[in-house]
Length: 315
Image 1 (cartoon, helix red, strand yellow):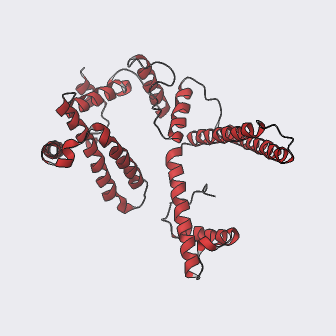
Image 2 (tube, one colour; image 1 turned 90 degrees about the horizontal axis):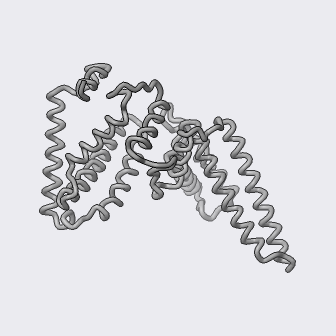
Image 3 (spheres, helix red, strand yellow; image 1 turned 90 degrees about the vertical axis):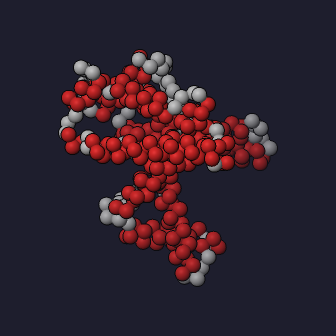
């Protein structure tokens, strides 16, 4: 049985596959985008001189814009998501076109490569393997990466350029694939409390070193060591929080972005409420600012879409 036959045999429902007419229409649109990309590279002075190194910064920007669109919520987000998907798709076409012109590879080879990889990494669909849960699938993926694809070591191919929270999350996932992941979510909470206590101890040591310096009896090396320990303990706390997010099924990068967005929205609303009352938020004391912040938080929570939880974590 070849891969196409296996795919047909394991398809759960014919409704999951597009009709022949729809498939041809999609292929035609993709072909036209390919032709347009080639035209831009030939005729546009700006597009013509771009390299892959020039373009990847835009690719990253488009990725984050897509994330924001997907997570924006509401029934009216779909046109925005579609637009951002198009922007990201064009990035792929453009990068592949640059490579084609350089004689490295083309878009077809890119598509063939990912298609072959997906088939290889889904032996439970296209082969004889079984995987009943998402966790089974992830273990299969990591096993295939290490064996069939020759990626050595537990932390193979984890990009060092990932955002810090995503980097920590990925390392924890890889460690879990070899069983180094014994803590349940409530145990990770205990670890977080432990890290907070260690930060408090480090801050107390720093305060003692400062006091000793003021009397002239301190060790001049003590304060730098105390400050360094505080920084390390904060890092340990952040790492533990990322682990908690992983344990409860939350994406730490996206959730931190979401919390940051809520904080920004609440502060802007607090400033607006202060202005309505004839006051300037930036000229207030902290207690008054906090009062407006809490009012803003309550108002925004009342106005949120039904089912959109007001998640904590910004204060």
